[in-house]
Each structure stands twice: as C-alpha cells, then as structure tokens.
Image: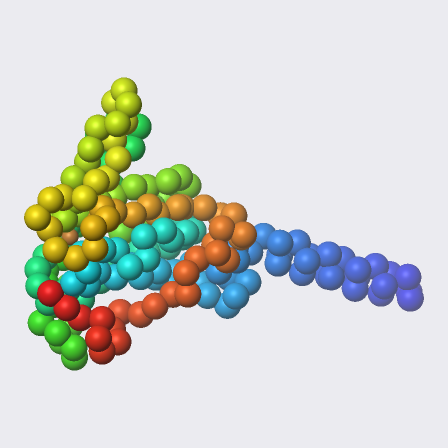
Length: 178
Ligand SMILES: [Cu+2]
C-alpha cells in the first residue's frame, strides 16, 4: 500500500516535470504564446526591435508611432531577393501621443527566419549571386542604417527567453517623431 502510494506520487512528479519541459519559455514565464510581441517604428525610420523571437502562432504586432509618415513591412528571402507574401504590411503615420497607432499583425505557423524591410526607407541591394541585403535608401531621414529586421519563429526556450523585453501597444512620450 505504501509502495503503491509512493509510486503514484513519483508518477505525478514525473508527469509534472515532463509537462514543464514541454512548455515554451514564454509559458514558463507565465506568458502565453498568444501574447503578442511588439515591434515599433518612430521618426528614426527604424524598427526599434529589429530582432525578435516568437513561438509558432504567436502574434507579432508592428506599431507605427511615427508622426511623420507611413512604413511598410515587406517580407523577402535574403538568398534570392524574392518577396515573401507571408509578410506584407502597411502602417499609416501616427497622430501622436494619446492617439491610436496604426498596426499590422502577422503570425507564422512554421519555424524559421523571416526577414522584412520597409520599402519606403530601405532598399534591397544585390550582393553575391542572387542574394540581397537591406541597404540605406539615400535621401531618407533618420538613422543611416537600413530599416529592416528579422523574426525568428522557434520553439527553442533559450531563443524565446532572449527576446527583448516586450513592450506594449501604447507608447511612451518622446517615442513619437516624424
Ligand atoms: Cu519606413
């Protein structure tokens, strides 16, 4: 009787441990995979979180805080330069603090690397073979880098835990600009 009781407890513990191991890092931190990860844009003409990791199905929300103009989010394959229709967004300019920001939400079912750029503030420059790299677009204000980023879709808890601290939809004063 005692032995059986112990066996039951051991089984329960094993099931709990296995259950925990099966959780994503987001779940382990108490954040569901349905909790969005945010990528913001402002007058610097940059994606402020250019590299994020999300679980399959987890929403990625692009938020435009730029009072100066619209931005696009265009997916592409760095090896071929082909467009990736899985990412194709347009976010209008913001009217400023306290006003709703324009957003674009995207989700990915499959693990992988998803590259994107803003076709208004960056261009795809040819490198070797058919490969391309986002490059600065001359005459564009803001930082002198290419407005581009990558979303890593993964179930790897270490990558998910390395995500930048998630921000929120409404933004802090001073983040607006155009
Ligand atoms: Cu842009």
